[in-house]
Length: 98
Image (tube, rainbow, N blue to C red):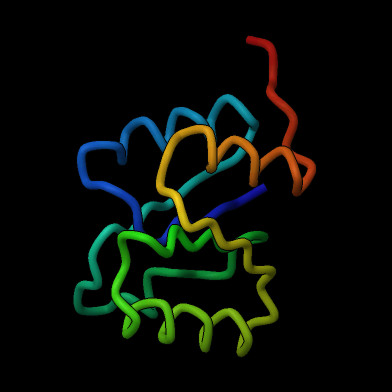
């Protein structure tokens, strides 16, 4: 499953990627909106919005892209590792034993 994470803390980007990897997901993480944001989103299976740490403008832009491309959206107010893990498990991404 491919996942795009929007929001969160810059210092946790690697941790978000590792959590997704443990659940068998490929992840892109966007903590801040940069030029070409919409182009870099792609068409993931799931878009995760960590709403506590992201601007309204970035959320609106991401939601519009998700609707346009029919991408499923999950939201969490917290940007913690456990919140991300819970979202992945709710959407069927079980931990992969390595």
